[in-house]
Image (cartoon, rainbow, N blue to C red; front, side, top):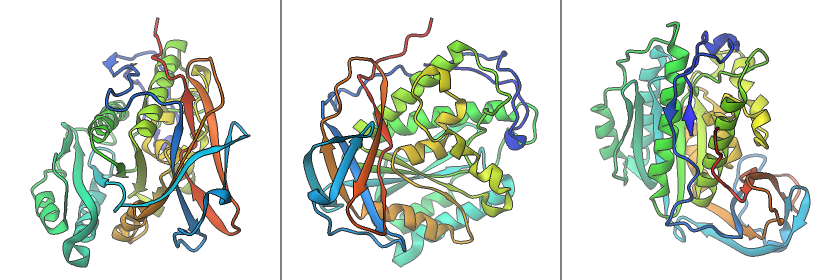
Length: 357
């Protein structure tokens, strides 16, 4: 897929100009990884919590109902898993491109505090990725030694930047850097075994979407193709995104929650928006969380990572479909009052590369 350069003002006002002046950026076409061959069965990781946030781990297969486009589907496999049963890796992603400069020190301190809690003993193998103007820096080494990761973080140069958030073209550059980083993270995590959690500590890149946005049919096809690609890669490679917005309550709730406008799955090119690829939207769609930071960043990181302690793994045979890239909404219902259930919100049947003419 290719992407375009956007000639627009900053999205802090949630306004964009016509998308006419774009330069093409190469992006991967939809290609299922050879290590994970296509399977008829759809596999979901499901987390269940009480409303107070306590995990529920005593449910049985008969307590779950799977709906595929509102049609009940028989469960073909069921398991209750922990990290002792399946490997779990955590990638902490610090965004120095889209985070306001004055908050970079805070997220660095908060992340460092998380790494050093409990005498630096982490529950899961973890690595730290840092996004700067020069691109994504990610160490190809995972460790449960939080002290060692903290020492490594101290040597990362994350404060300097060439792209100013107030610059006329900053939205364009930050969007392109952010999209490229998502592709790199997915490619990196796809090679890892087991379950992967990618935790974005980031306000996300500019959404470049809104009621005044004007997109060509070709641009919408490109976004749709990438939505299919990322959704399929995340599902088949057992990757979930999580997002903590470090700007927190200092921004308006309208700005903080604007991503919710784009949470529905992209069913066709006609409803594709650039915001459909944002970390917040992808986090919710992949079964993760999108949180607005409070004064307890270490606690919020811990809340996200808690999902990897135990979960249910459920498989079902999807509804038949002959149409390529047909979006199916998935819903999991649990026969237990007062619980919260999260999993992926859907999948694309017959995922096929989108041809751009």
